[in-house]
Structures are given as C-alpha cells and as structure tokens.
Length: 183
Image (cartoon, rainbow, N blue to C red; front, side, top):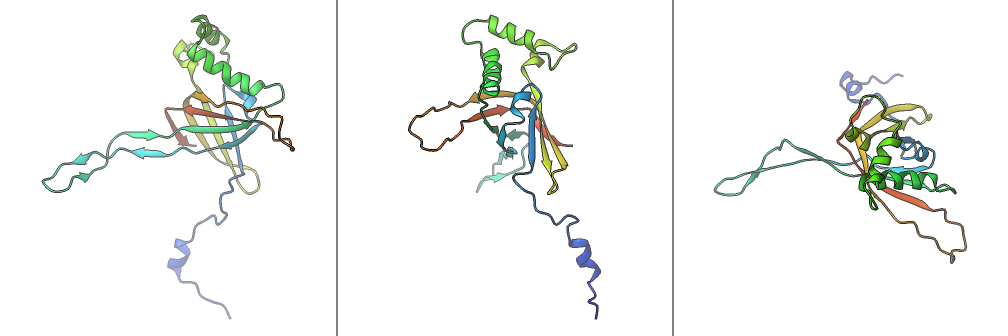
C-alpha cells in the first residue's frame, strides 16, 4: 500500500533538511593570515534597521527606517606559543592608533603588502574578511564576506600559576566593518 502525499505538502518542504552545525566554519581576515588556523569562535553580527516614530495625536507609530546598523564582529582565537597572531592584531591596532608617535602609522602603512596596488593610504587601514560556512561533510557551502574590516579592541590575556589543568590562552578581538554579504 502506498501513501499518496498531497502535492501542496511537497512544495512546503525545504530542499535541505540538514541543520546548520555551529562547529562547521572557517574564518579568515586577509590582513591577519596568522589568525585563520587558531580561530575558535566567530559571530554573524546582528543587523538593525532604525525605526523613526511617526507622530500622531495619540501614540507614536514606528515606521521602517532607512539606515542599517551592524553589530560588532567578534572573534575568539587560541594564542599561539610565539604570540604571532596576538602580536599581528596588536600591531594593526598600534598602526591605527599610534600610541607612541605618528611614525607608527607611517610604518604600518608601509608594511601593508596585502592591499597593494594604487590604493590610497586610507584603504590600507581596512581588510576584508570571510566566514566560510561548511556543510555536514565539511565542504564550503556559504561564504559571508565582510567589507572594510578594522579592529576596535583586543582583550587582555591573563596568565596564572594557580590552575591545575592547562587552559590555553584565548584572545578576544572585536572588529567593525562597513557591511557583510552572502556570496
């Protein structure tokens, strides 16, 4: 005996019934190749559309705005023994913020070999980043590209001699960006 499935049920079923795994990803920032292998977590930031209020004699009514606001891009990464990835990120922040002298910014601009080409010095402050979302077979499925990424914070590392187990140090970094898109 075969069961007949109504035609409208077939059109309502998703094509892919596999759930998205939170562990199936790869993340890279063009300017920070040292970070890719050690990346532990990354978020897909929130998007907020502003909602101005339309005034009425009674209750103000929200209407769709025209400006999007993106949340922060946050990344956690294992710090390698030589601190290469941590120092590279710290160097980018120092280049942008030049805490000691202006020459730090000039040196940062000269070190940038990633952007290359006839770009202005301002474009060297940024980098693109990509989040590769993997299938359950660990093949690339979706690519999320973040445009004009730059770091805004690098959290502290805490060394301690009182732990019984080795808890490897994890760096936390926050980035801002212009927008992201699915490719």
